[in-house]
Amino acid sequence: MSDTFTLNPGESVIKRNPEVGLGKGPFNRQNNELILTNQSLILQKKNFFGGNEEVVRYPLSDIVISNGQAQVRVGRLDNVTQTLDVYLTGGMVSFVFTWEQDIKEWANEINTLVTGGPAIYEKTDLMSEMAGMMEMAEKLTGTVKDVRKAFGIQSTETASARCPGCGASITGVEGQTIKCPYCGTYYTF
Ligand SMILES: [Zn+2]
Image (cartoon, rainbow, N blue to C red; front, side):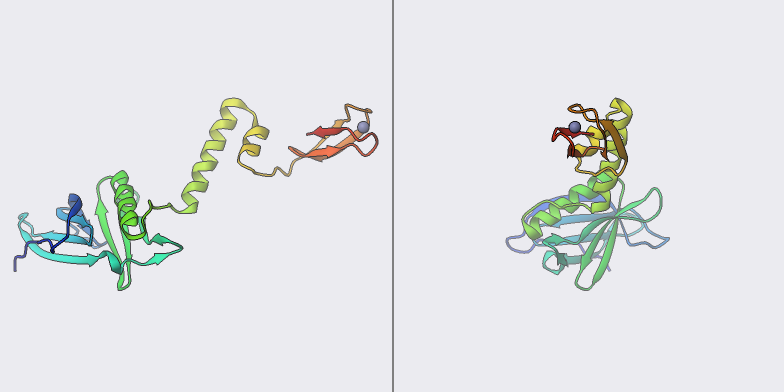
C-alpha cells in the first residue's frame, strides 16, 4: 500500500525533517519524513527504497498539556541516540532525530503551536546546567561565596571572624550578615 500525505484546507507546513526514525524498535530506519503543520504532526513513512508507504497523522489537539506545557520531551534511545518524545492522549510516540538541537527546536515549535509559548525544559536540565556554570565560575575566579550568592544558594559552612567594631569573636554561616551582639556592628562572613 502506498500513501502520500496531503494537507487539509487551511493547513500549512511549519517544519519538515526527512531523516526521522520512528519508535524504539531494532529495525528502525531513519528515512521517514516528519512534517509539522499548524494542525498535526504527520509522519510520512517510507519503505526500504525510499518510496512513500504510509501516512500517520497525530493531531496537535491530542498532545497532552500539563502545567501549561505541551508534553514533548527530549528522550533517549541509547547513549548516542536521542528522540523527540510526544505524549498523546492515546500514548507516547518517539521520533528518532539525528541532531539534539533539532529535537529542541521541534519541541519548542510544537509547544508554541499548542500552548502559545516555547517549551521549558526539565528542571533537571536547568539544575545540572547551573551546577556546571557554578563549577566553572568557581574554578575561574575562586569566588565561591559570590557565585553561590548569585544563585541564591545558602552555604552551610560555618565561619568565624573578629568583629571589626569591638574585636569580639563572632561566628556565623558563610555569606550571612550578622549584627555583633556586643557592639551592634554588622558583619558579613
Ligand atoms: Zn562588636
